[in-house]
Length: 111
Image (cartoon, rainbow, N blue to C red; front, top):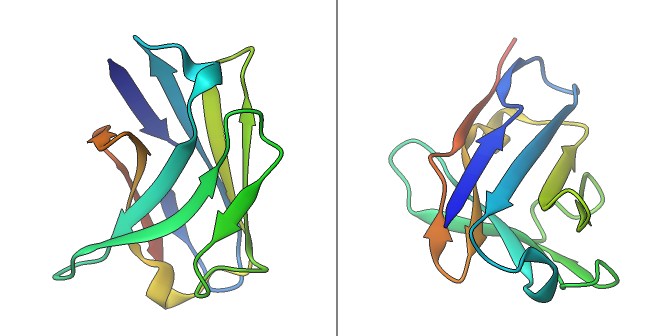
């Protein structure tokens, strides 16, 4: 199993980023996928989950209305569109498949 996150970077408050997670080694289209994050000095925080077909999504209250999770089962990829970013969104973002995570991608929100 391999999960490869990408798309992080440095962005100003109010800006946007789109994270991607390319998955391989399992039947991607049959599993729900999750994004989690870890801010400096803090534990893992659940961010969002999408079901296998992409028809149901859930979000943490802290990101609801600003982040959108989606997936492309033809490309074995899950996305996280992040808008109106805040400094408190600064974290390493990981996609998660049944507890397995990739290396993460750093998101820094700062002016």
